[in-house]
Length: 313
Image 1 (tube, rainbow, N blue to C red):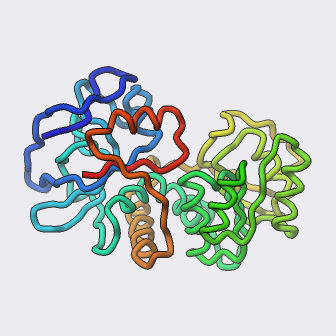
Image 2: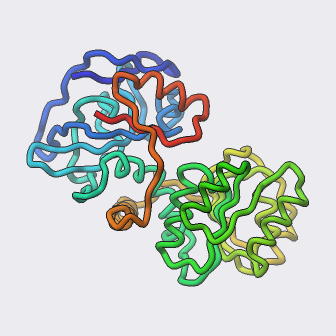
């Protein structure tokens, strides 16, 4: 089969021939339809993820959607090594695979795995979002942030605010249904003012994809008893948090990672995401790339490409 193959840590994969996976009991082989690119792919290739230690050569790609011979479509994260999802074929452990319903574009289904579950689980499983609450998505311009805005609406949030830098991101957030946007700026006072103006009564739930300085402003704008779910740190790995800001508001800071979430919770989250995707309540703008151009897509990912990249076959 043709596959994007990694030959050494940190290197860009090369599209070439690779051995076909063999079917086994409970692990059929699927024809790959779409495979989503994520920062975790770079971390795995660089040997930075203890849960997935790669021995080279190996096929790149952590998540994807494939179709088995019986016509069923499955989402899979982490095919058995040395196989990955950036290939024509992949093994599918049925016990760990998640069904993809008819009517959902495989490229979208692949993109709602890692990114979609990060957003949905942060809101439902970690924040325990309840109907009518006010949600701030800090870093709403990226893929996880866009999904989080739409997921919050689907889960019944009363007000959803998306915060990001730059007018293109803010316009995208408006277009997917956010009730308001807040522009994050270099001027700390201006950022805080935007966050407060967007929700004068404060926020019940904050989905933080940035950390760094923006999280400090978000906590200042939070309501009493707010839950801040820490998901990503694209603005920096450290933050200076004045204790009174969150102590006097009884703000709870909760970490989230998909990889330490029980499988049944992930299964449930993905099922909900598929239901909303089928109903056109959750969607993404996708940049689809052929497998032959996987190396180019990999380099775009390394450079911090803003859009959602998906390999399609």
